[in-house]
Length: 237
Image (cartoon, rainbow, N blue to C red; front, top):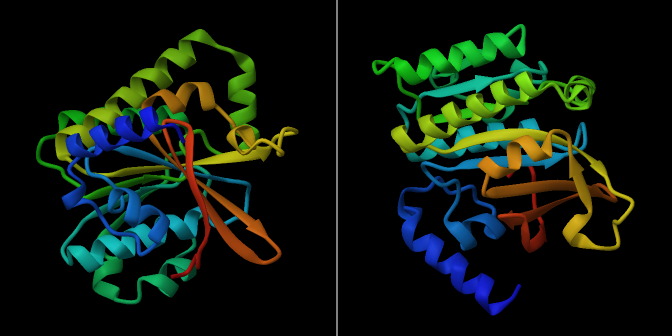
């Protein structure tokens, strides 16, 4: 990373309230920015089955360690959340009751729900998770391939609403995204491609890439698409 990029990164950290972040007990994240940042969108990227949903549950548990009465909204478009997995990490029944699970039947239903959430001043969550924003890999591919300008405008407005919620409520928002390996794996700066990347990336400054190799878990941390570090870590904590 160049000196100019490092200086720009440090300047950003002075603007972001890293002292109110949610520590993840993952050194590569906590040492750099203190954890999940309030008011910011974060994306958790990886191939199917690599552990994106478990990473999100780990974030919920980290929040509860910090704030026992916190409320979480878990929006699962692709139906990956299993109660058994949730209970493995979050063992207290009371805390499980503070996780509101939203299962929109369509992208339209999801958009309408969050549009109403922007306008509803009586509702508030401490963490919002989208798993995933555009649904399954097949749904995402089909959506992106259509190139429908109206739908891209809807997604753009939807992301504006999501960013507005993060900023107004000063909470972190997590968005999981499916990735596919690139043919350019030799170059770490372009070793992954994300479905719908051109739509989502402009709104998300912080990227975590989850990788598996020889049974071990690895995490790449990027800021504004720039690779900062790669580290092995324990997914279940």
